[in-house]
Image 1: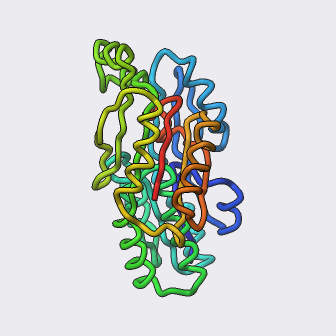
Image 2: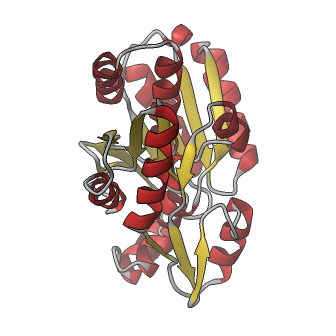
Length: 274
């Protein structure tokens, strides 16, 4: 089975190569210049450009043609294709994949992760591991749905600057938030991003990520936890260390957040997926 995903997955290149995953890149426009995620714009370059841009970068889904080419090659080489994507509530990427699916003859399945960033990535990795184990497509999809439905994604936002640039928050609200040092915590629910709570101060905000994990009362010893960060590696490493000490998970996958979700999270954002 050939696994296909999109560049919102934020998976490191070594894992993509290890599992032979086909990644279809999204597009980003910054200051009127078009870039292709992961092709001519790295995560590091994206954050540098975003910080100096007066307007919010714009992201757009891949063309159906890019999916068509991937699906066609996948069917020819592997017979079966499973295409796993960013929440359909956040992007039209999933729709573009379905448009291509209808035009390619063969066994092609599309899957809506109802998630973003490493929440997509961990589901992609899960599918790749299950495929390697030789599970039938129906059994794999059933297991993947269960994994998706148990998944939690919580994000700490350091600033509301990008929300203001995007027109989602007014400047007076940003002023008030900055005045009182308020830090929003958002989470993914049914594929949508919703505000969970707003707290005063970075320390309390980051601590909430740990508290949300504690609330679930999960045994993490057989689980992989994902962390992505928006150009704040030191904070991400500190969070990783605390999670490892407190929960002793099977593995913690730490990587940078890409342009697709990073555009809205903004510099200093931290995402935990568990």
